[in-house]
Length: 336
Ligand code: TRP
Image (cartoon, rainbow, N blue to C red; front, top):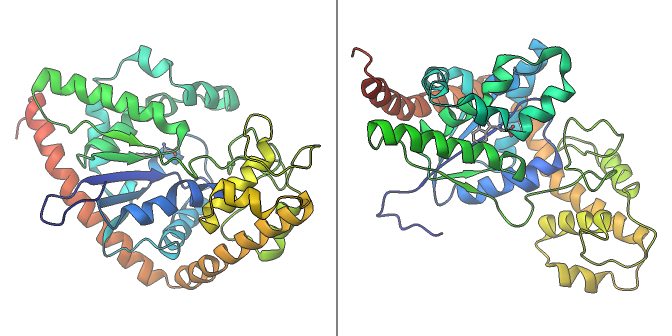
């Protein structure tokens, strides 16, 4: 997937919901790949605050989380000079295109979205229209930038697929307007599981103590979580997600932070116990996260610098987004 500098670079867009602190799962599954991708693609990375309010948020917390995440992204290695790092609500074209696209999105297809079904069973007191039409907003996020690739976790693949359907439907009626994006699901690190329930994705909404670890956790907190990680009653360190989900998840994490392959890891721990294995993985994670935590704290303390970053990001994103939005408004017949 190398691109040549003389050709137009391919475009990538992705978003993360500022609905809680960033987890080790989001770093290894998403951000680390973004950093790599931003060398070869034109990248737009967005704090999806408009998606976040489909479930209730505490306003002060939402605001803080968005700023903290921007700091975390930069600390993780995203270079704000080479990609657009922006806040969704600061680029009005997202809300504007989302409305248009919702008129080309079917009730039936939205009803089939697994995430909607899950969230509406979890939040029975607040099954709002935004939660239902969320995929139309996400389609707008992607299509505004004429993105080629959308790096997402498995759980978002269905949303990228509906985005493709919406784009094809629109193009079918009005002629080529949107680039049809591809989901981009990296093979390694795409799915880090809970340390306590290793058959479930590591998620910030996970409430089991120690199931989820965060980028800003202290070394002590990290070590405690890894030492307590659930394994199995066997003794062998072998990659086998179906039979040994806990051990395989720890191997996945260790592989992501050290770049060692599974066979190398199996050899390294052959004949060693789970205790030593868990401590080694914990220590590797601590050392990976230490500079990220320190840099985040430094950036977060500098609000003026952060504001410069997201304002510049919104300006760059807005420029690209408005080009697409104007084309769409013209196509559907809005008076220019
Ligand atoms: N819905 C995504 C999530 O919950 C976040 C998101 C919003 C996103 N807009 C996007 C991801 C556009 C990729 C592209 O994780």
